[in-house]
Amino acid sequence: MQTATRLERMHGHLALDFTLKQQRTRLTVREHRPPLQVVRDFGLADGTSFVHLHNVAGGVLAGDQLTTTIKLAASTKAQLTTTSSTRIYRSDGEQIAYQQVQATLAEQSLLEYWPDTTIPFAESLYQQQTRIDLAADAGLCWWEFLAPGREAYGERFAYRQLRLDCDIYALGRPILLDRMRLQPSLQQLSNPLYFGKYSYLATGYICRVGWDAVQWKALEAELMAFAASQTKLGRCLWGVSCLAAHGLVIRGLSSNSRDLLATAFDYWRFAKQALYGTTPNLPRKIY
Amino acid sequence: MPNIGDFWLGYTGVVMLTNAFAQLKLLQLADSALPIGSTAHSYGVESLVAEGQLGVAGLGQFMRAFIQESGQLEAYLANQAWQLADATAFDQAWLDLNDHAAAFKPARESRHASAVLGRRLLGLALQLEPLPRWQQASTLAQSHQIETHHSCVFGLVAGCLAIEAEAMLAALLQQMTLSLILACQKILPLGQVQAQQLLWQLHPTIKAVVAQTPHMMLADLAPCSIGLDGASMRHPLLGTRLFIS
Image 1 (cartoon, rainbow over the protein chains, first blue to last red):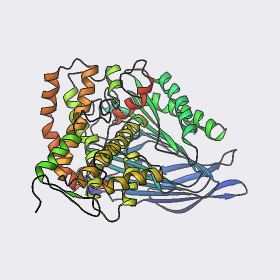
Image 2: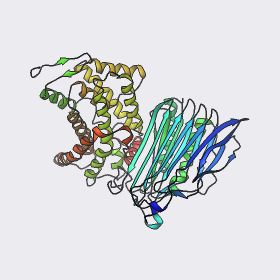
Image 3: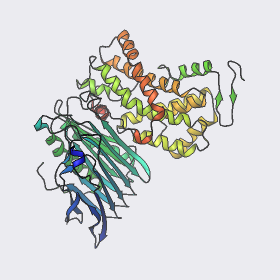
Image 4: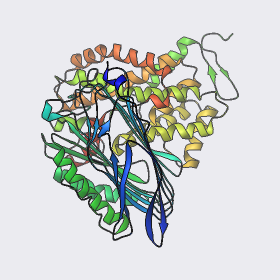
C-alpha cells in the first residue's frame, strides 16, 4: 500500500483573532483543527501577544491541506513563531502538501512572524500561499526561510516542486506579489538567476502603511549598508529594496542556514527602531 | 476593405492596418535603437558579473532561464494590455495591470527601469501617432500617480495598432533578450557574432513562452529570479557601474 493512501489526509485549520483588552493584545483561538495548534500566548512587556504555532504532525504530508487565518484588530500587536522547522514530507504520487495563510491587519496593528526553516524533503511536492492585507498604518515584519532539503542526509534540491507565493496588499492594492515555482528537475537551480552557488534562502518583508517614499528610501539605504557588511561572496549574499509602496523586501542567499537566521533579526532591529522607535523581542530560540 | 497603407481610425482609437504595415510599425517599436533607453539597464546582470557569478560560459543557460521566468511575466503583462486596446472597461483594468506589474518586481532598480521605459515608450508613441487610447492610458497614469510599465505599454500600443498578439509577444521577448545580451557585451568578453548566435539559439525558448502566454492566468504566474533580483538590489552598491542604478 502506498504511503499517501495509508495516511489520513489532514484538513487542518487555525483561526486566530487578536483583540485589544486593557492596552494589551489578547489571543482568541476561534477555531483549531489538527494538526494545527497554538501552544498558548504569552504577553510581552510592551503588550504584544507572543504565540507559538505548532503542527503536531511534525510537518506537512502529501495531501494535507492546512489553512491559517490571522486577524489583528486595530492597534493590536502580535508576534508569531513556530515550535520547529516545517518539514515537507515526500509525496509518492501527485498529492501536493498545501498550506495557506491569510493575515488581515487592521489600522495601527503590527504583526511579526518569525517561523523556523521550511525543509522540503526529497520527492516532496509543496504549495504555500500567503496573503497579507494591510490597513492604514498597519505594520508587518514577515520572514520565510527555505532550506534545500535535509542536507545531513545528502538531500539538496531533491524535492519535486515547491510553489511559494506571498501576496501583500496595502489599502486594497498589491504592493508585492512575490511568487516562485522551483522544480529542480526542470530548472538548473545552480543558475545565478536562481540560487547560484548558494542553497538557503531567506526573505523578509517589512511594511508600515503610510510611511512615505522618502522615508523608505532612507531606511533602504541604512539596511543596504548593513546588507553590504553582511555579504560575503561564496558564503552569503544579501539584498534590500523598497517595494512599490509602504515597505521593503530583504533577500538573502547563503550556503548555510545560520548566517540567514542570525542576520535576519538584525534587519528588523534596525527597521523597528526606525519605524516604531522600539527594539524587537527575539523569539527565545537558538540562532 | 482598405488598401495597403490605408487605415481606419475607430472611436476607441484602434487602427486597422494591413498586416505588412503593422509589421513595419512593430519592427520600429521593438528596435533596440528606439530612443527609450532600453540598453541603459542591466537588471542586476552587472552585479552578477562583478561578483563572478556569471560569465560567457553560463550565459546561454542564464538567458534561457531569464526568458522562461522574467520573460513569461512580461509576456503575460503585454498580452493583458494588448487585450485592453479596444476594451470598454479600460480605466480600472489599466491601473490594476500596472499595479500588478510593479508588485511582481521586488527589486526597486529593475522596477524603476521598467517604469521609465514604459513612460518613454508611451510618450514616444503619442508623439508618433496620438491615438485616443494611448492618451487615455497616459492621462490615467498621471491622474492616479501610477507608473506605466514597459511590457504593459508595449502590449497596449501594439494592440491599438492591430498588431497580432503572437507577433507582439515575440517582438517584445526578442527586444528584451537582445537588450540584455547587448548589456552583457559591454561587461563580458562576448563578441558580436557570438551575441547574435546566442540570440538565435534562444528563439525556441522565446517561441515556447509565446505559445504558453495566452493560456496563462494571474494565479499561474510564479516567475522566479531570486538570484537576479538580489543582484539588482545590490547593484547600487557596486563601486563602478556602467548601467543605471
